[in-house]
Image (cartoon, rainbow, N blue to C red; front, top):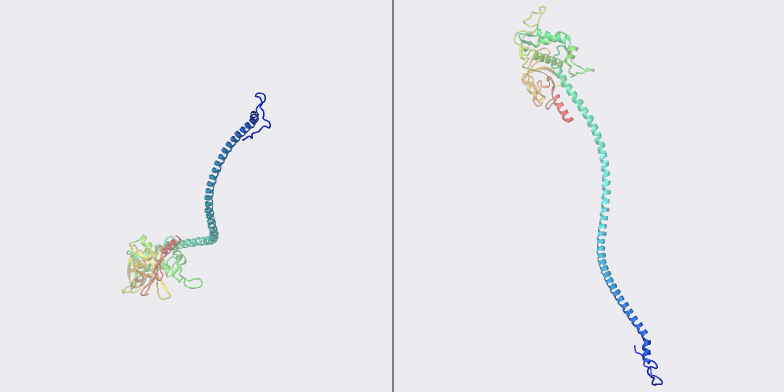
Length: 398
């Protein structure tokens, strides 16, 4: 700082030591000011240094904040992109969810419909199970009926010797009076049956309203009633032959037929005396041996006489029938009339039987065969028996 010079108004010499010089006085006066100025400058310098340090720190802070802001902007941009992608995916998901909701609603309706259908099916199934249960009962009842029918034929295959006094007497008289020289006279057997004990006679079996009946009588029933039709007579003679097959297998069975020029003795046998000088015979007739009791299997066979009627007789076969399919094996069997013991011929000659149920001719065509435990019938196409029906019912009952 420049200080202006002062020119004195009256310059005079002042002795040294007598008064201070003006320059010294000014210098002394300016010292505090200078000191203050120095202190101010020092303070200002110090403050300026502090401010510069603060500014530098602030600049660094601003730089850091700018860097962070840049990073944040980048992250914000990335997040914005991710958010946009997420929002787009969410939008698609919402759209898909809406579609799925529609599908779920459709599926729910379909499930509800299926549930209704299932309920109906369950109800129908329950009804069908009830029907099947009833059907099974019917099958079981039918099976029992078939088994009972087969048992009926077994039970009526052998003559009941000890059933009643009458049956016992018949059996005894046949053994004593109809066997002569090892031969069983079948005509004598029919004579004993019609004249001894209950004296069984032929009678057509009819229903309550008078029509002909095809019902089979048991042996016991025929003995009790004292009558029977051709089926019942045939069953009776068949049972007697089975009795001799069991007890006297070597005895020869003899029927009779017309011709020969001699009398055929019926009763009593030739080896015995006449009863009251009487005996029964067939004139101009002769015996026909039809096998031994042990070598033949007796069967009742029924055949067509004409278009509206039939007749049953006894066939003696060398072959045992084991099923309905064996019925045609009766070809060659010899046949006799159980009501008089007369010989009728052979199956395949005087009688016909067909493997497939269809015969080329109807000459005495056999349509029914009764074995010891079954009945075989020609149904027009094939031979069937109770055992066949039992197998079918068993298969159906499963």
